[in-house]
Length: 149
Image (cartoon, rainbow, N blue to C red; front, side, top):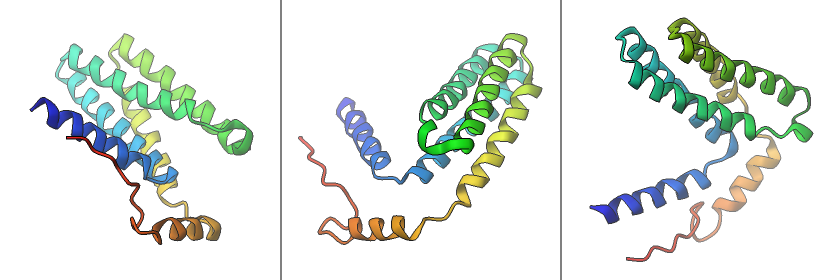
């Protein structure tokens, strides 16, 4: 069974590496929303350990979103996202210290709004053409994967 877990992780890693940037960001938002929603439920049930664990996971995703910003190319949008992610990160720290589910709920609402915005972003014609060119090869859009058994 150990081998299965290793191959499952390799598959997930390969799947993530082939996802375009917008979809990956939406996936990160989905993960943060999921963990933080669980954290709120655990806070309401006074399960501090599970609440803390899920807050840390959500906070880690926000830290990853913050670290992945391209400030040179992103301009004002990247700057605004940086401020927003920093605010959310700090709110989660305070929520964890004070056991304040209201703060977590506000962060979840912000993440849902951002997720909706990212879902609405359309590909440029150049991006569409690049995607079609990648998918035209013999692997039809899949990177070749060398698996050892």
